[in-house]
Length: 435
Ligand SMILES: NC(=O)c1ccc[n+]([C@@H]2O[C@H](COP(=O)([O-])OP(=O)(O)OC[C@H]3O[C@@H](n4cnc5c(N)ncnc54)[C@H](O)[C@@H]3O)[C@@H](O)[C@H]2O)c1
View 1: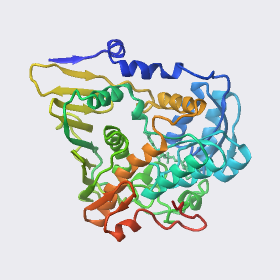
View 2: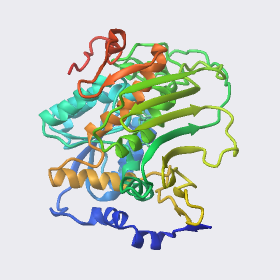
View 3: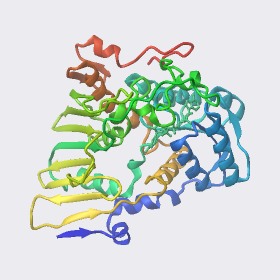
């Protein structure tokens, strides 16, 4: 028997979720003031957050910055339409920080820019909502945590599944022991795509400052597949599916592990078995993470999207009392009991349009955290730990061998080549944020 908890019943019956949904309205300090907010990176996701910030009533959108003049112009027009006030427009985030003096900076640039802009914003006195993954190499994340703490700023990572009601219900279910002892976790994303075709490099378009887009990363020839959005599949700027989608599901593993346990051993295999385009991220990858008391597995493939498997993406927790699947659109969270006489429970997804997200809840948690001087639900330390799982998986994949991890020291045990790859050289004039 399959029992679907409808929204009203669900909110009544799941105490943790009730509290979470009510959280934005429960303020210990009055919402009598809007924050001066600026957005750096006004592409797809940066603008999704910016819209939610404006709609929350919390944000005075004072400034925006992008190295793509088309994106900058479109964002300025949309924000002006929403607020009746034109934001200041910048092509360099350093000018924005110095001259617009925001209290909050939203960072929606490609991954390789997140660390330097976050650290500069903290040093300029701003709180930061930075997108996932927190960076491109593992030690950048630790430098970001240090900058947040040294400046006493709230730095929140955009892992909005932390506040999705159906996810919170599922994680409470697992963490409260209702699934029994969990011995294995499997996270996966199976998407379509297939082989694809190469696209030739081009001269960068006149509206794009390609040098500044590449920033601290290598200056590659411009390819239209990289920008906008496509950088995810180019390893100079991102970490493929595991660093992009994967980090959301890695965050569930961090959540389960109590935000403090790290894997002892990591091993990854995969390759480009199908892709024939000009990207370089693996189209097929598996990772095994050995924690104390459980094994976690990641797998992705970018082909053969079909309905052969019940759930196309998400995370399974396998316990002695049954299996819990947490998915996304169309799936929500489902408990499959080991005891056949018990009911299957499905909690439907509660997501906002466009793009099926829970940014409004995360934004409310962020501004509440600033007002109440506490850390956010997706604090930078948590985001760093979840990002680290993706990066350790990619590190093992790139090395072609397994690694042993000392999570406390953030060092690979007995493998100096691997330790060198926890950081990378930045392109001048940018310097790596050493820990
Ligand atoms: N939390 C989520 O669910 C979620 C969803 C989508 C994207 N994201 C993240 O958001 C980030 C952006 O992704 P996107 O899909 O919006 O990409 P996008 O290409 O649409 O937007 C990125 C923007 O940043 C700009 N940019 C690049 N370098 C810049 C710089 N130095 N200064 C200012 N602007 C700069 C680009 O010109 C572009 O407009 C990525 O890190 C991605 O992982 C998160």
